[in-house]
Length: 117
Image (cartoon, rainbow, N blue to C red; front, side, top):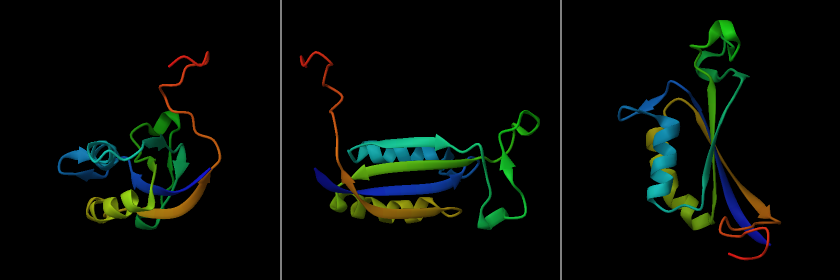
């Protein structure tokens, strides 16, 4: 169907940028710039280079943990490339991965199951 780019950004839940959680700021900025879409997923467990001796988990006892947050954005190579400088500015304690993906099926959100938009 289409070759697009997927930008996957891993940050900590407690990471902030200009007074806002980084994962929220990333999604808001992606929307403002009219990127095709963004999704945030909260990890239930993980660790990273910054604090590799401590595993963060969503167990009941540790609800205040700094859980991993994953922001995924898919758009054209040009749109992702123009967004990357801001990602590099905002993400100071995480990692961003860019890869080409082959979109094999996409149904716009205005599509209804009966075929009537």
